[in-house]
Length: 296
Image (tube, rainbow, N blue to C red):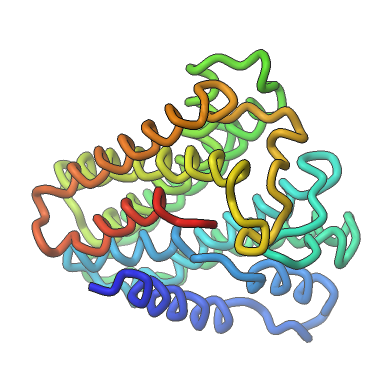
């Protein structure tokens, strides 16, 4: 398998669906829809929706049927980036090589664009056809799980802990909590969304949840590393922003060599969780390796 080509193909399918599901840029009032689309289509690997789709495919579900829910995950991720970039949070001027939403459209419109993406996301989940394996009960379960992953027990909770944790005061347990919630919760719910909507049983759901938890940790530790050593042109933002903001990171707490070892360990553990699926899990295995080998 040429993993990068396969990832690009799957990402393009997500982009096409996002374009169809979002209001047109010119729909009234156009300012909000332009801001939403500006941030959503600024780039990105679409890893969260791709994870949901790949999980569904591996379990014999229909990726097409769960596409609206997969797109909802990307909307939530984008909303979180818009708000993270605001002056009250990380105060970043660039995201993926272009001005951040608040730099382009102003702070008020950026806040509203994030709010609108988050709100629309839950509407998109309901567009999955309630037939076959996707029963109304499974759709309700996914709505509940996505809300939890995006809320105070997930993404928001991790962000709150991150705001209150400086690099020179945080301990390993708190740092793991931040990464597990701020980043890992959305990876976990992406995999679980694909599994639940594909009719998975408890055993599959348990194995794949563990895979997602290790994957999310490997991804975020690697992000911490890339903030120090990554290529600014490829990342689309200045390197060293975590250091500048005195952020709690794995390299800051454990050193670069140990952070690399920990990221590699997490990726390896993720791969081991897929042993029961044989060749059907090829893409998900390569994805776990990709997150620690990437350059941006």
